[in-house]
Length: 100
Image (cartoon, rainbow, N blue to C red; front, side):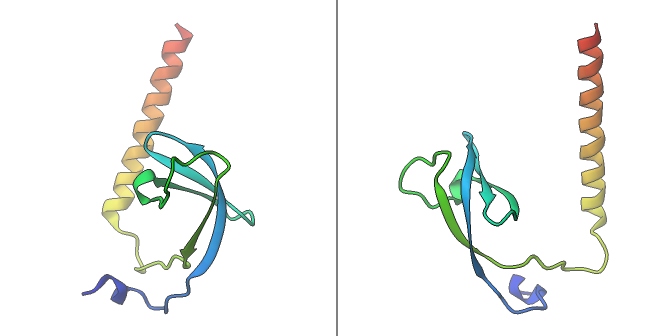
């Protein structure tokens, strides 16, 4: 099955714009114009002829995300739960270390 066949709705790409608000060794964070939120992508996905810098404006095509299944994927649910628990454990150990 082609990945495109999983979608029920036709492609509705629109042009979105944003401003790079953070640059790291691994990627960039883009603040979307129109208070649409943020998007963080690896640098390898950014089309750029020079080093990206904070303040650079970007544009891209994006469509609306579509939920692919009626039920959540249990593997992902468990992975996110495990990740959240792990982060909480790290926070707790850090807090205990700082109190010493």
